[in-house]
Image 1 (spheres, rainbow, N blue to C red):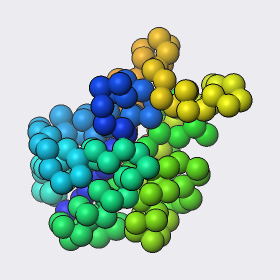
Image 2 (spheres, rainbow, N blue to C red):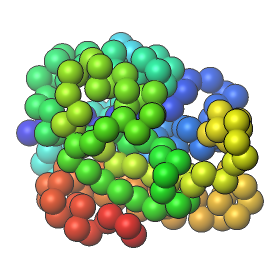
Image 3 (cartoon, rainbow, N blue to C red):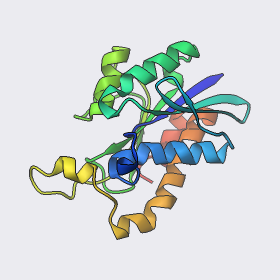
Image 4 (cartoon, rainbow, N blue to C red):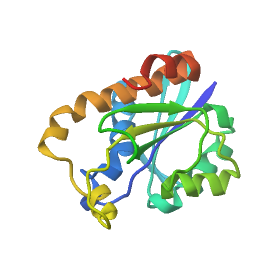
Length: 187
């Protein structure tokens, strides 16, 4: 069985520690956990490893957020991975900071990365893990907020939240989405 876990983010040093790149951080933690290394590949950085007998591909697309779907579609097709074995990890403004919400399907909720994936896959029916970044910004400042750096308070809790997200994704790989949702949603 093969799985593809995609952490959404933007390439470039200026985006590394921003809220919008939390998907990359979770992908890095998953790779570290299964002792896989990222290598430059088609459409981004890819790590390959095994988790409890299952082959896991971890992708950090280098297409920028609004073209993430190109990378996802390419790797699903190249590795012949079924849609139900895909997990997209993304930031979410509508959830309080650090809250995790895994779902089997859903709308893009205005997120450009999810919008691109939906367009390329022609469906909303793919698993995703949303990582809450809250919405602590004034009107018209959404872009500055999501591309902004974490607050000191957020940074204090970030490593534990990223680790919990990585565990949720690996639970999805081994125990299935229903078990992972039961164990990690809202936690």
